[in-house]
Length: 116
Ligand code: SF4
Image (cartoon, rainbow, N blue to C red):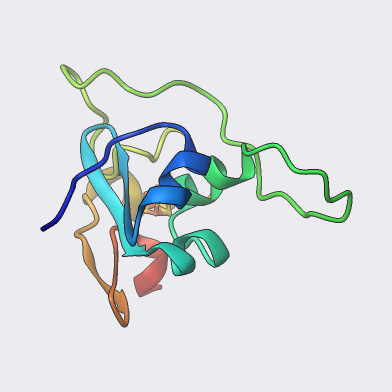
């Protein structure tokens, strides 16, 4: 039996999940076993989400802050829907939507960074 559990609280997700899918603007941008997502998030939005979790470790190095708002699904951006907010946007990101492709054993990622 499988459950699909949808939440915004990453602590709860970590407690109840075996695999985690990260969604942005209605699409899965990364999916991987829980341990891999939490230890090594590959998508810039996954990194931003995990960086937003409060920590007591003063040596923790955060990724670049993601500014802006989630786009309207009625008028989504061209190319990668995360490109207006992504700190790594390239010209290709504005034109071509990234496909969700295998990025390692049991992992899938939708980001052009994985093919550069
Ligand atoms: S495809 Fe481009 S804009 Fe989208 S997450 Fe990857 S680097 Fe950022």
